[in-house]
Amino acid sequence: SILKKIIKGIPKAELHLHIEGSFEPELMFEIANRNAIALDYDSIESLKKAYKFNNLQEFLDIYYIGAQVLLHEQDFYDLTWAYLQKVHSENVVHVEIFFDPQTHTDRGVPFEVVINGIHKALENAEEKLNMSYKLIMSYLRHLSEEAAFETLEASLPFKHWIDGVGLDSSELGNPPSKFINVFKASADHGYKLVAHAGEEGPSDYIWEALDLLKVVRLDHGNRCLEDDALVQRLLDENIPLTLCPLSNLELKVIQKMEDHPVAKMLEKGILATIHSDDPAYFGGYMNENYYQTAKALDLDKNQLQQMAMNAFEASWLSAEAKEKHI
Ligand code: ADE
Ligand code: ZN
Image (cartoon, rainbow, N blue to C red; front, side, top):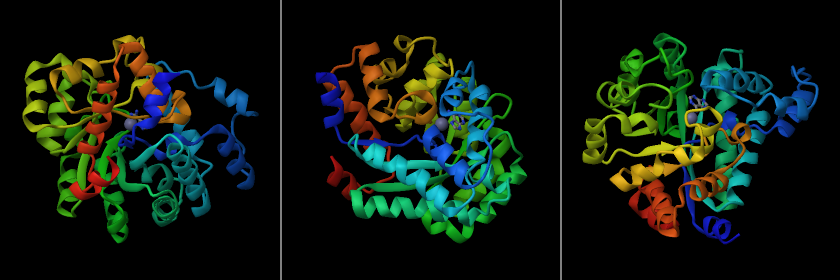
């Protein structure tokens, strides 16, 4: 279709992607086999059938199980490289991806095994696919702040490979305020700060991410529209929101794509962008997110280009590097 061609033709930046959420069932079974780990599902089909979620937690429960087959540097390399090749084919030219160290270190996989594999794949994409990248380490918010501090410590030998820290996992009941100290310490080590907020959680959590954690960008932020003063704050400080339409639909943050808030946000002048979150679980990578959103909200070419431009503006690329991509 013409719409699909337009979307593919736009150079894009992905700013909200959990690398563990790009783990396709085929690769999961391949790695499980070579690591002699039994998955709870006896086939790719039965695994895919389990991908029906009523909320964030139901998804997370399956997402953490899938990640358990990742043991060796090669596994993390293969996972990351598969994602990078896939989005390269969609004309994504820049990525800022999350990884969840604690999902692996808590199983006894050393931090360095995880980051070595991911970093090598990112370097390869820069060299072979002409892509640029940033890497963001996410703290799991269902765990304690103390555990996040241990992760911060473990990251320090690899600080030169990590651009920022984020906050993900179960949002309700785990407000940003739980992580004030570790975010402050992370900033002192030179990390940039982002956090998931306002996906399922209330607009209060978005205020906390801004005022208490001092993030420079918000992941999701859907529920900001409930609060006019908050919208004004986002506008005044030009705070980017990285939205994930297919994720929102699959996790029942919205009931149908027509309800997605991104069009309203763009109308208000918010620096809103769209991304894929966990594409292997939610049924689509970047272009499918653009496509489904454009169709449901009747976005025109200018609005699609605006969203793509917003992502470069919201990115951590230097002004010079941005120019090269757009
Ligand atoms: N981890 C992976 N995907 C996530 C999401 N959409 N929200 C919170 N944590 C996540
Ligand atoms: Zn996310």
